[in-house]
Amino acid sequence: MMDMSILIAMPNRDQQALKNELLAMDNGLDVRLWPDIGRADDIEFAVLWQHPEGLLGQLHRLRVAQSYGAGVEGILKDRDLRHNVHITRVCGSALQDSMSAYLAERIAAHNLPGRSIAETRVGLLGVGRLGLAAAQHLQSLGYQVTGWRRSAGALEGVPVMHGGEQLFALCADSDFVICLLPLTPATENMLNIHLFNHFRPDAWLINVGRGAHVVENDLIFALDNGLLRGATLDVTRVEPCPAQHPFRRHPAIESTEHTASITDPHEAAEVILSNYHNLQHSAPLLCRVDHKRGY
Ligand code: GLV
Image 1 (cartoon, rainbow, N blue to C red):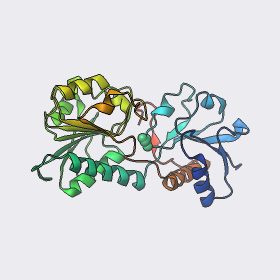
Image 2 (cartoon, protein in one colour):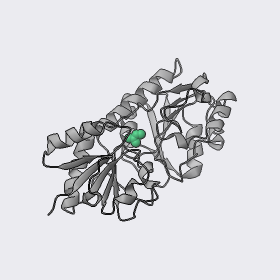
Image 3 (cartoon, rainbow, N blue to C red):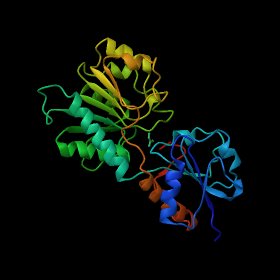
Image 4 (cartoon, rainbow, N blue to C red):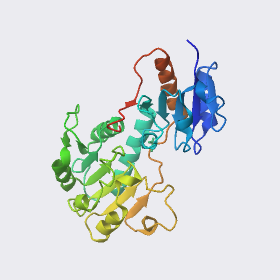
């Protein structure tokens, strides 16, 4: 079988570092770095992160669009994405461990004095790979963790609720509400005033999903009116969060600027290389995303 080329197109990330990792694992690979894509028809595999507009339209032979992060909304929203292109993402223990450690740290930092770990209830919205790993980690530390997902389905060892009504009930019952949902049309703007109305006044929100999960004015209104105590935002609609943004000066908002969990180039390279080989051998791809569900 003829070897295919891998294109790395992530203008705001270290493309060369990823290329180096890939070549260290297999120096026979043809890895191209955007914008030097060469002959577009050689490219069947593309690693993308905030990729340039118009790029996918040029890649007529693309078969895999591999996100360089855990999220894939930047790929899914591209109008040039063809339905027969497989979407995959990075997943692995480095990403999970850093997210879990971040959440444990922010919860400890914002827990109320005198409230023990065993008394502290954490509602975790989104129990995919990162969410489940975080839930298990927080449980192992002694927190009471309940997950929430949009559709029904059990999880091993973690109580889980689902659907709209149970979402309100879970928020009403949580000292910390964590959003680790994928961004899809169904979850966009989900952290809004209707939900904040169900929060406990001393609850703390941690958003490690995407900025677009939050209706920004609703969050400010909710904080100013005592519907919740405070929020840690790792993500914002515009990143980095502009200096003039009201989130910046709000005393009840802590901003951590997308540091909760950053893709490790080595872990990413392992997933990419496995998927590259799996594609060549028509084997199942790792960390696949369903176009329709969006995660
Ligand atoms: C980061 O936000 C990611 O999706 O990996």
